Image 1 (tube, rainbow, N blue to C red):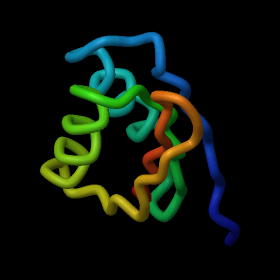
Image 2 (image 1 turned 45 degrees about the horizontal axis):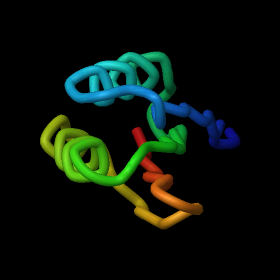
Image 3 (image 1 turned 180 degrees about the horizontal axis):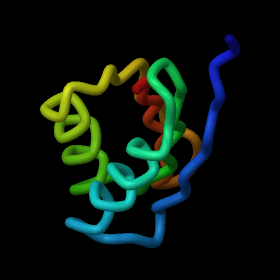
Length: 76
């Protein structure tokens, strides 16, 4: 079974919608699937990875993309 990777762009969203949208996307995935979340630095970058870990998801990486945009890779 191959892992599916889905990309979610929440760079225009603000807390708490950033994690709400992330959680909705994660709920649609199968266990083992990957969600790449594009978000802005500041609150979203602090909150989304922390909240994902608290919900029991595996945060694989956090990397800078460009400007204020970062990518958080979460495995369900």
